[in-house]
Length: 457
Image (spheres, helix red, strand yellow):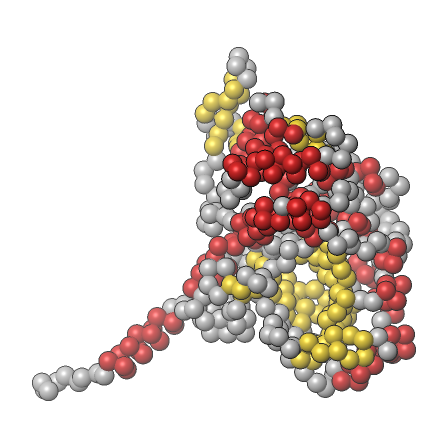
């Protein structure tokens, strides 16, 4: 050994370098959301929006909404009734599903059944929480929120789930394929939201496709295993007793229930691709009339496959027969020319009045399971596109420079001009593709009139 030099073992040197590297990873081995400051911008209101506003501003836009203290003034009896004493007296013999452990684990065998009375005896002292679809007799204490009372929402309520614990529960970072209004009857929850447009970053590492959740440890994020999470913007919000929050489908979220009695219900409903304004005649946009949850029809067995299939068509109001196959093939790369004959036959099966025009009235009422069962492979490819690929976004940094266009009155065309001209958004570009089909005589497009009840959110 030369004088003045100390030989450092390779293992120690590697460990030192690793520690130096991880020290630079903000949020490493810390709770989810420690990697950067949260963004703002989630709207807050003091009421349930009318169905018209809810659909236009939040369902179509795919944006969350916080509704503060709405259960204090809204007619949902369970908010005032569901004390432990009341639940024991009225639903004590009801069998409920219980998860063992406060931190969500989706391993088999995590659920067990017990009566409501037994749960109420144990939940304050044991590491358990309750999650189950409410029973028909519990529906008598629940009404449908104003936002879901018409327009089609009321026909596609998939389930209403009860969440009940002594607090301290933590979910996975996950996403759902249903829209969701979560109402807190007691307690406090902190929610981290991540826009679905950051799908590629969130799902880059450790994403469990079966179940739709991330394997990241939400209490201690290993940024060496989940490096892309460092770049993910997020929102953080807190809801308290009496509040509700709208969680858009496909938005990633993590729910942290704070210590103390924590009781919530969430209304899960299929993403509505078309708002039926005529269905809302007589609905007062300013007053939540009592619509008992028990009066809402149970979902049909084909409702999930139907609504996933219908998401393919967005805001297109109707199709001619000759454009149907073109549109599906353009949207979904896995649909081949060979599938075109099957698509033509699917159109004929869906076109119940045989007028060669397919409308939403038909799409929302036709029995779709026989069509699915006749062409299961084709339907599976369509549904897989909706679930996995539809919202892939390459826009994970700043939006690109907009394309600026000028109206040319002589030809009805547009040409490039300066920034004072009309700005074309990504939505405009997508709609142009559809308009081109319409100009070719292949596609019927109309705008659904927006019924404005003179309400401001």
